[in-house]
Length: 342
Length: 243
View 1 (cartoon, chains in turn cyan, yellow):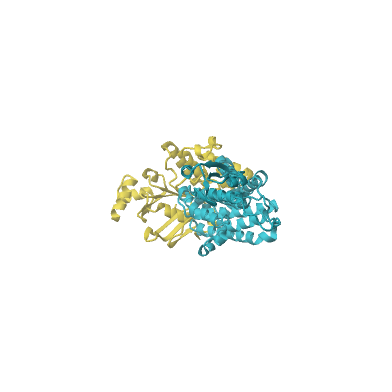
View 2: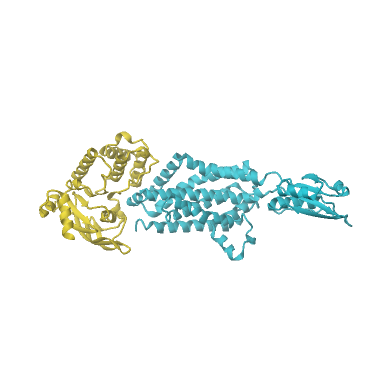
């Protein structure tokens, strides 16, 4: 009953704070939308120059998918390359083609190379290979980067914002002295933490539903599994963020110090959560991923959203997240002993 | 006064934070139904002492007893109303919402809750401002709301840390009247203050300086012992003897 009083108060404060609600709901939506456009934008059209390319060859080149300009001399092309109006140029010395690339942006270099390799006429092959038949165990040929990163990003934004808001609101409880007042009533320490977990938990449930539904139905993020599993994973992840935020707020004296935890605690999780391929991470560093809650959430979310897996595939990860959450709760109750021994 | 029951008993209490001693061997008894004032400059250790009595801190040495039982104990905490130096209010909620929240923590519900909220708000003269957000309260109003919250669950013992800081003289007078009213209802009040003229209104006083209890007695006794005309002079005389 006393826990419910706390829950009611937390929800009341949240509802009154329109800006925070906006941050918790619309900021993830905004960022996910922007990422959607960044990842799913049109393919880059390379700007390519031809210098002394024999007519016999230009005739064979399909100039679709690139902006081709012909130059009379290499110096002219070089000038354009220097001023970044050109991504690369193709020149012929006798029968030997060579390419000069601008080369400062790897993704542009890649696109230019890819186009050139496809466009240049190949020597006729002796045997025509039959077209390769491609089958996908998961995903499909039209699955983009956004679909693969999406589940991780979804988890990350929920984690980040809940961590911050919960941490700051518990910090305020401490600095304004209301925590002391709560403890001066006969409220038990676990009741305080329980109130926070339930109060923010309820709110997070609404928040995750909105954000996830937006990502799946509006941004068309790939969704092979059941919506309810996604919600479950995100909710537990949010509770982990909440309890971690509360815990770290005990080591901050003000809001700015709470912010200082972001580069130390939140940002590294991104790198070890599977946004980048973990198998390429230096081996002596890769153990870090096992310490980051986001890693387990991302893994489970990807299982559900990309691979269409069900409970039997995600439960180990979900249990680990739950264990993190319980561990943080236990430490929180211990830390509160600083304010009242019993 | 001395034939009433002992309400608070502080026995050989010392407290240090690291190597820094804050309280040194304090022995003190307070009786039921009195207003006991703890007087001393800031930094003397008043807050540390009352926090121990409220169950929020523990002595490094010695023991505190409330109602003949050892502190800290959750059962005893329920019988105390504690008002800290900071106002400890939720500024984004209205006064009424603050009161509702804290009364629910003490298990007050429905009719009884509404009635207690009305009573305490009348006592601190804030009845007209219950629906205002606390952010819009002045410093003095916040102080009074904080006091009202401490009174909600009708505690037998009230521990008030600097209750009248930032309150103008007229209101201060009315708050002290509320204290005497509570006293006549049989409550015990412990009030810390560094304002000397408030000390005169207490039944008994404990003078604290540098973590030591330098004198205990009624304001009249203290003045007579030192041949002083004011508490301030008496305090200086006791403090001077110490040096």
